[in-house]
Length: 214
Ligand SMILES: CC(=O)N[C@H]1[C@@H](OP(=O)(O)OP(=O)(O)OC[C@H]2O[C@@H](n3ccc(=O)[nH]c3=O)[C@H](O)[C@@H]2O)O[C@H](CO)[C@H](O)[C@@H]1O
Ligand SMILES: [Mn+2]
Image 1 (tube, rainbow, N blue to C red):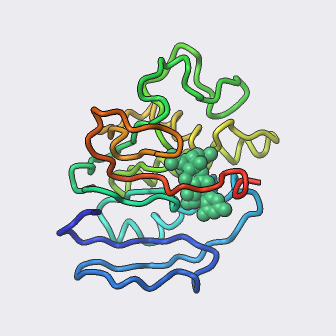
Image 2: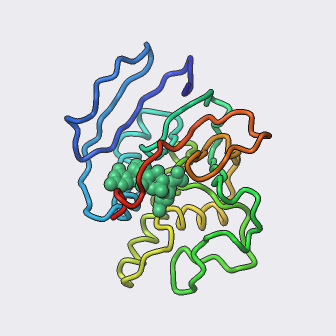
């Protein structure tokens, strides 16, 4: 379903490179396994993606690709996702909040945190699991989010939704050039599909959160 007819490099970040299956790929597609370190807390694994994307962007993505699409690993494509998503900087509406008022968004609301957003500000609540853009824009985004997390860590604090809180702060003050609908990120375990969403293009694979998170 993903970028059919276009050249695609799948960069898979893992601490267990030998466990990545060698899936046969169509012409013009390649798999690149990038070995990264592990962290014992899942929050740290998720948050350090920003640092990893930032570092690899400088080291190689800038030289190798035009656009980056950054996504969670526990998801699958279930319908067309093509070049219509591409733009200098794009984010995706988090499916749980696309109808909610912005005061209800779970932004980081505590003043002393780097990802702080005042109650009366905000456009959308973006999902941490699907964002992207040109490599230069994604490099700036991931570097800024990583640096903000370094500051929080030095202060002994961690944003309420980790990397997602920082992504939301960044995209509030650096407006994305495209916002994708929840068709592009859905979780059938969490929400029933409303009839006006005719297609679910990229969906969470059911998982036991308690087991994985604890
Ligand atoms: C769909 C979506 O918007 N997901 C976001 C949501 O979490 P999720 O509830 O989807 O969190 P999650 O358990 O999928 O973790 C985020 C991602 O980190 C990676 N990972 C995590 C744990 C681990 O042991 N190994 C590993 O590789 C993996 O790519 C995973 O998909 O909020 C997180 C921050 O709280 C992240 O912003 C996720 O992107
Ligand atoms: Mn996930």
